[in-house]
Image 1 (cartoon, one colour):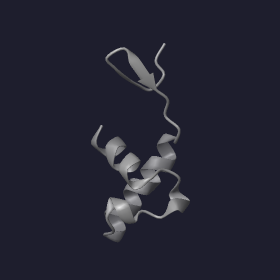
Image 2 (cartoon, helix red, strand yellow):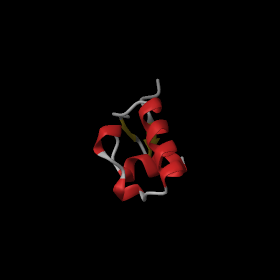
Image 3 (tube, one colour):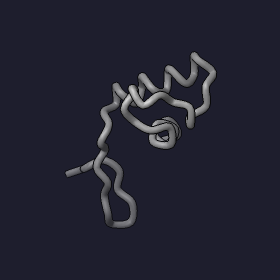
Length: 55
């Protein structure tokens, strides 16, 4: 059973759904803002959206 991302024996749960993260990624890509400037209304933080973008 997979619970999200597993690394060296421990797992972390994904708190934000794929659609929320995708909306945040599209916003950053189209608006030209930085990951740190991502508005809170998207759900995930800038670092979280960036990490999911690079996965």
